[in-house]
Image 1 (cartoon, rainbow over the protein chains, first blue to last red):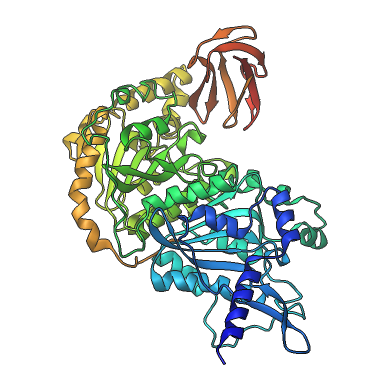
Image 2 (image 1 turned 120 degrees about the vertical axis):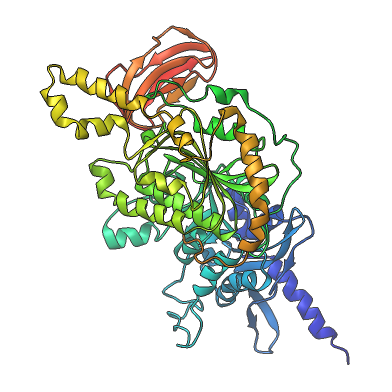
Length: 517
Length: 71
């Protein structure tokens, strides 16, 4: 007798697994404008490239005769696949079963995702929609017993994955509990504005514990989480989220032991951008668009901004110079004068850790007036978060180039210059312990008070000191490597990158410190 | 109809247009003062100023509606 009966049952189970939570649950998912996890995986991956792991993991139901009558597949989908020809690991909860709250096999598969990423050293992409544990436990019969005392920590591999491979995540629907924690345990996260919420606990739990009546969107919709840094980016819908993840991956190496892919660049390395000559207004009080500088300097269309909605005085992202990935960090003087706020410092720290983890050279475009001041800034512990950013910069080992575009003041400025940074200054650069406007009132208080017209005296002192902000003495003293025509910024940065590129292979491998959420 | 909303809070330093004015693309509409910086807001396209919701000296908040431009 052959093994045909068993083979038939393998086929039967595979077919049942593809049915997910059943036609009705799938239809409900679609009626709410959300894709199923299998559709999401299909959209992400190159056609036909999905190699599923554990496709028939699940919970069978047998009749008295021992025959299979029904079958609940694991509610976490996991496997290998390719994105633009590159191998990745992809996983995500199946919301059509138990609302994505882990079933026994689903939990095993979900935890396996990070193990696989560390083992195979390829990028990990998680597409989340699901909730955490249930008081009913994974089996529905009561809370799960914790694992044995010698079981490895479930979160160790989550942390190891972030130190080993690029991890990109998306919130596609409601994400709560453990999936929410894993969503943010990533180098890049994006949420669908039309379908996703991210909540530590849902409305029912919140109302029971705190008496606070809020909808899912009020608790954790995109308006909350793209502004507080829970996710890096928001995108209109699920498809847009997937496109953002693909774009992010295009800058990334497969793991920390490899260099980022270099793409062919049709933007000349020696391109001088005329607009840069006048992008910074001569009137020191008038704001300008740092993003215009970024777009003019880096390869055409290559800037991928991360975290635009929060810590908005700092602009961070990835871009290319002559086809090579670099981290880009500028100040936005239109937002709180570009000062270092607590959330801006947190965003900057994560940005630097991302670059350090994957050995990306960092280019800063500096217009930093200093730490944010005032009572709100004090309440937010700005000095602690800011100093964390400054010391993170000081600990990095990747090459830095800093372009002093305008202001560079206080302790906060130090965060923009890593060790041995190559420093170029525009003629508009000003630097010192603190900006003239604030500093004069303090340092010359008596002189100003004693003057017949204190206001005029203050202005006179400000103008006198501002004149001393000329960049020429700094160049004469070799306090900057060079004073440049702003139009030369791209050519000069491309030359610098060609010089530091040979150093990058020595930086590969695990970093002394990796990125933290 | 294009709503011009404020990207940050601050005070309205200069209001350079009034209801009914024709504006060019890129023309400065008003200047906000934020942390001693003057932040100009420009017309995203040519049109007519339909309504103005701010006045010089106003303290304004993030996402406040400043004015509306009719293409």
